[in-house]
Picture (tube, helix red, strand yellow):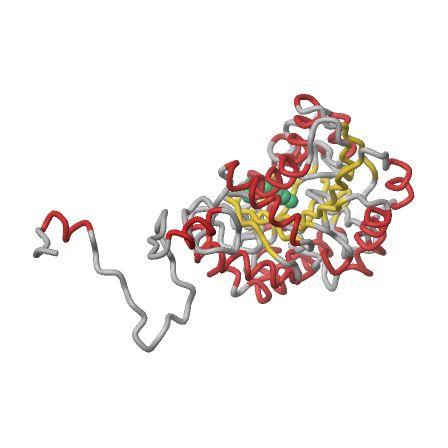
Length: 390
Ligand code: PLP
């Protein structure tokens, strides 16, 4: 070829070649596509999640590192990373359900998931039933010939009911129904649902897995290879794929997940215990407290009880509003799982699309405040809460 002109050289940049060393951290492959020497390898990569990297919506090395890391932590055979937690949940629900199918979900669900399940019932011809998260006999009674999925959350939002995963997943498996568990609140440090019989685990990696309130993401992890490939095909057609930079930030955050979880749980224990003794507080919902209805189930399933809890103030909504506008260190903000302590009012924010009856089913009232405890010094947090309650 003749000497290239500047216009061509500017486009075709030199590509790095590994020359006897390799990076310590996972590199960010911020590219939307890949170059091939062999057309057959190109064609093969289009059709499967574990072939050559082809096009960013199908696969990317940084994203695959994240998928392998989370599949490894959860004990799955494969994982599909997505651009948000809802991307993962919808890839699983829409990828596996069809009109005429029946879905059984636990009663208390993350608001976005509850809204999507309502949509499936209203617009896509999927029948939906609800059962308590800790009642395997109710689940057995609800299963019909057309039941395809059982949907559970390890720790539910915001009053922290803990699902009896071994018992519920055993019934699902016995009756040939696929079980899906949202493990966002527990993270794989506190619970690995596949070890308890779950078929699919979903996460909002926006939360504990990334951990720094700077990235959105989701992931679905599979115990079964065929199901993994089926959902991968659907997710890439749906366009649920994450950007490589989001995957890179998530991987970076995940390296400190075990340390952060330890501190989140310890801080939540201190705040929940002291709030439970405070005269302005009617109830505290954290499964590590003996007063919580899930205390026994949680004690068998989890080594510690997570960094999220909620509490009801005796003065109802006005007291809740006063508390939320009086905190100085905790931030009034959505989301959870980051290093900062965040609080919110579920009835008007995360669960606003629910009817009063559905709110009651979730255990939420007008005075409920949710706390996503960060990793600050616990006494600084307690001083802030105490002044806001006074
Ligand atoms: N699952 C749970 C338990 C959540 O709390 C959330 C978000 O708050 C989601 C799923 C949805 O995740 P995302 O906001 O990343 O779509």
